[in-house]
Image (tube, rainbow, N blue to C red):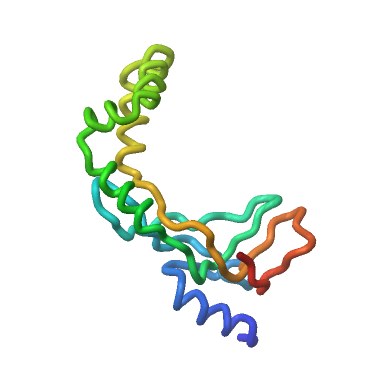
Length: 146
């Protein structure tokens, strides 16, 4: 195993939680993410993002979390659905339009999925590029970005 692979192995063991050996390199399968869900902040395993053309994959070292913003999200995600509807009438209108065009059963499944999925936290991130998608010529793996 070359030096590059050993370094990547240490990186994966420290920051990522599931990977597989693929074409002489590691493929990231899953990672942990902090979500605001049902009135709480939770850590869940989620599928790792994949690099697409014009994008980069960054191992995040630091991310800002605003206490005010995140606490607001925790409070609102813990409210019963009827109280959320009162506070967000625009969302109610969107759901009613969806029910009229796509049916009540389909709309219910979509809403339930969104409610159970949670919302990711953090913004203004900084880290190191792991992978670069096609069309990105001015960045490369190992660069620090913010």
